[in-house]
Length: 270
Image (cartoon, rainbow, N blue to C red):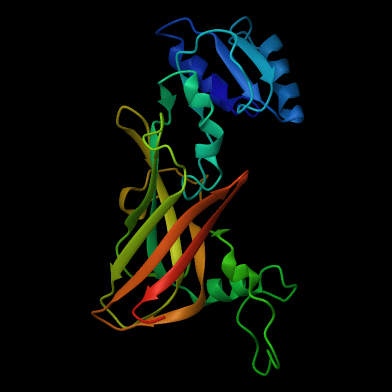
C-alpha cells in the first residue's frame, strides 16, 4: 500500500524497486480528487503501472484493504518529523501490517539567534511589514503577538546556532507507545553571551533497515532540499550568559482531531 499516493512518485518508486526482485500489486490510496485523476490516468496508460496498480479514492484512516498487506509506504514527514500529523495518519494504518516505510523518525531542537526572523514571526498575521521596526515606529501598544505562538517552516540564512542539536520526540511504526502525545525537557549549554530568539527544529528518519534521511545539520543528507527547518519563536528574546544553560520544555498535545505544540523557557530566568 502507498498511503497518501499524491500524483504517483512513491508508486513509481515502489515499482522500480520491485522490478528486479518480485512481482508486486500496489494499492495507491489518496483522498485528493485532483490527484486521483492523475493516478488513474497513469494506471491506465503507463506500461509499468498497467495491471499492477489499483487506485483507491479514500482517506487512509478510513480505508479497508481488500486483501492482506505486506508493506505500507508513506511520505507524510514534516520539517519536525511529526508536524504534518504522520503519527495520526499512520495510527489506523498500522493494523494492516507490521512493516512500514518509514520505520521511525525523530525530531531535534537547537537554540538560535536571529533577530530578523524573530521580528518577522512577531509580525506574522498582523498586516504589518516584516523585519525590525523603523526608528520612531511602534508608538503605543504593540500588535498582538500571535506569530510568536506559531511554528514556522523557514530556510535559515543569517543565524547563529548557539548550542549542539538535541533530540526531542521519536515515533516508531508500528508504534512503540500507545499515546501520540509527547513531552521533553532540554538543557542547552551556551559558551558565549548571547540572545536566543527561538528554537530551530530538524528531523531524522530511518526509512528501512538503516537507510536514513535527515535535515539534522549533524547528519544532513545531501540533496534534502524538500524540507526546511522549523522555527519555534520565543515570546520574548532571552539573554543567556556564557557558561550557563538555556532550559526549555516542549509538549506535543492532542484533543480530538486537534494537534498542537506548546513550548516554554524555564531558565536561566523566566
